[in-house]
Length: 535
Image: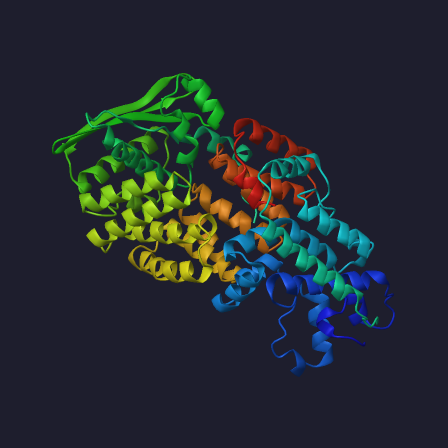
C-alpha cells in the first residue's frame, strides 16, 4: 500500500480485495485528531520502521488504539506538561476535556469497521461543533439520559473563552489535515442473585456522639467507620458504604424505611461517649423489618487505642455470630488485628476520615495533613499509608495537580502499606489507581481485583475497577456489572450512580440509564461535577 502506515485505515493496509472510499480519510483524520489531542500517534511507532511490512500490517489491523485521554495520562511528565501547556490548561483539566465526548468522537473515526465511522467529513465537523457547544454528539446515541446530561452542562457557567479558542484551534488543525492530499490504498454477582447475601446485608448507621464536647464527634465517626471496615472484609456479608449512611445521623425515619432505602435487612446502631480517660461504646444489631434487636451490648474501657480496637473487634464478632456467619481463619485474624497502638495516631486517622468526606480539594489537603501526622506518630500504621496514597491520587482530579508528582508521592506510600500489611485491600486499590494513571492497565486490573478480594464490600474498589473497564479496557458489559455492584454497596453516592448511567449508555441500555439519571437529578439537584467529569 501507499501512504504513511500510522495514518492509514485498516482497509488501506489490508491491500488487494478491500474496497477503499472516503471513510478511509475519516480514519486518517481521526488519527491526526488523536495525535493533536494527546501528543502521540494511535500506534506506538518506536521501532516501527524496523518491522517487516507484514508485522506493521498486523499491528494496524488487530491492535485497538488506547483512548486518547488514557494515552495522555500514560505520557512522561515532561510530555504531559508540554501538551497541556500548548492547550493552556492543567493536565487534569485537559484529561477531563478529552475524556468523554472527544474520546468518543475520535474512537468513532478510528473504528476498524468503516460502516461504524462518520459518513462524511461534514458529519465529523458537526460533531466537533456540537462538542464545543455542549450539545449531544453523534458518537454516542442521543438518548434522553445523554440529553439530560448535556442540558445540565449547558446550564453551568460557560467555559472560559481561552478554552473554547484552544479547542477550536485543535478542530481547525484537524480539518486542515483532512484537506491535505492522502493516498488511498469479570463479572460480579449482584446482590439480588442470592437470598443468602440479602439475609446478611448490614448497614452501620452513624454512632451518636454522647460526649460532653461536640468536637469529639470525629471520634464517634471514626469508631463507626472502623466497625464498618471490619465487617466489610467478611465475604459472606453485604455491607453498605459509610457514604450512603451519613444522611441517617439525625433522621426521624423508621428503621424499616432506612433498611428499605439502603436495601439491607439489618442495621447497626449505637453511641460513643468519651470522658476523661475512659470510652464507652454502646452498639446493637436490629432487624430493620421488625425493629427487633438481635444483639446489644455496652463496653466501658480505659481510653487506649488497643481498647478501642478490641471493642470494635468484639462488636464485629458479635454481629457475625448473630448472623450465623462462619469466619475463615484469615477473616478472624483481620478482625483481631490492631492497626496502631498509638491513640494520637488513631485520632489523627479519624480526623482524616472526616476531612475526606468533604470530597473537595481542601478536604483532601486536610486529610493529607492528618495522615502525615498519624504516620509521624506511628511509622508502622499501614492503613494510614494506604489512605495517604489514595488522598494524593484523588488530588489529581480534584485540585488539578500533576499526575507525575502525585504518582511519585503515592508510589512509595503504597509500597510501604503493602510491606506492612499485605492484606490491606485499600492499598491494592491505590496501587490499581496508580497503575491506571501510569497507563499500565493490565497491572491496574490485577491490583483492583486483589483489592476487591481482600475488601469485598469496598465500594470505591468496584467504582475504580469499573472506570478502568469502561474507559481504558473497553469491556463495557463487565463495566456495567461492576458499577452495579458499586451502586448496591453505596446507593446514595451520586458519582457512582452517574458512572453506572454512563456505562449503560455505552451498551445502549438507554431506558435504564435515563431512569437512573432522572432519579439521580431528583435526589441530588445540585450534583453537577459528576456530569462535567463524564462529558
